[in-house]
Length: 413
Image 1 (cartoon, helix red, strand yellow):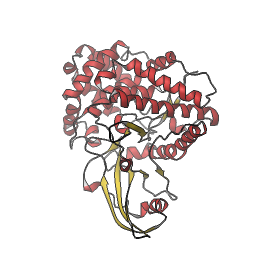
Image 2 (tube, helix red, strand yellow; image 1 turned 90 degrees about the horizontal axis):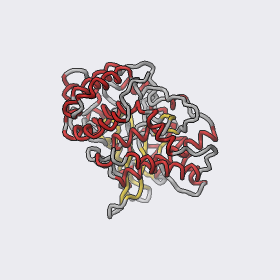
Image 3 (tube, one colour; image 1 turned 135 degrees about the vertical axis):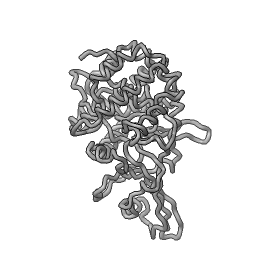
Image 4 (cartoon, one colour; image 1 turned 45 degrees about the horizontal axis):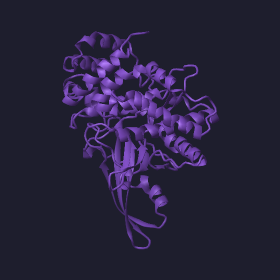
């Protein structure tokens, strides 16, 4: 997730024109001079939370006298109180490696198999990494890519497009694992924290969530969720379980709607789907991405009613890509994928109690990471907005009975 809060104080002095000059010179070999440079926030209020994403705008003059506009996306550490935590999670190291090494390898694998696939924006690798954490990417907005409205959720067409792209990404990562061996240890977890600094936050969030159960017509589930939540580990910090024989892939790791961008033509036809924000990738069952994406980001009328269909659709695209890439092991069955979704059901509580409320929350000045982490006044106000607005109430009324019937809140340890 990426923090977005329109505040000029967020513009860091160190992120100057020089940080981009090598990229501009690569893109414009006939550059004469840079006429202007401006940084601006790229995300609206309440759109993202963990890092800060800025747009760097340039007006250029070329040697032939013509002028050109160009922009880049710059991802940096947040200015929030969570800055030190994010810095310790190694998310920038992981994202640089995913964009710089794995995605090019995956795309080349498909190219060699006769299929042209692009997973995300162009990544600009600096010759000399600055002292501050920085990732520079293509500005997809220049090619008409957009996010869709997170509060409305994704319809079946855009949901299928994401599931197909996830299946292609997952398949390539599984084939690469068989060909080249394990991914680095950083990919065993979403975030590589040295200590659990979020225990109090999880307790506060779960308590507020359960207190809203009367609004969700779920008071009868309060004790079960409290009991389950009290012993559940933080899935974002948890090591991926090593289950013998389980099909594993490189998960996107933060597969919610704001981390997917879509390109349409003038008539509205969907042309392309790209990933962004690959900082939390984890090598585990694809059940993680599937639960995370479907439960957080799809329209309410398909989220549960078409859940099994969406898993089957993903499985069809997964096996299709595995066969194309000549996967050397037996193909994962649809049944085994459903079994993995049950096995990895510990993801459900953090998704529906935290991620889904964030996705559906109103855009406001309150929607930022500092208020999310606050256990008192400002945090309580934000949590009430997250957990008691009409959108989240409608979703919870449908989701909670379904996950309860699947045994999601059973204490089995």
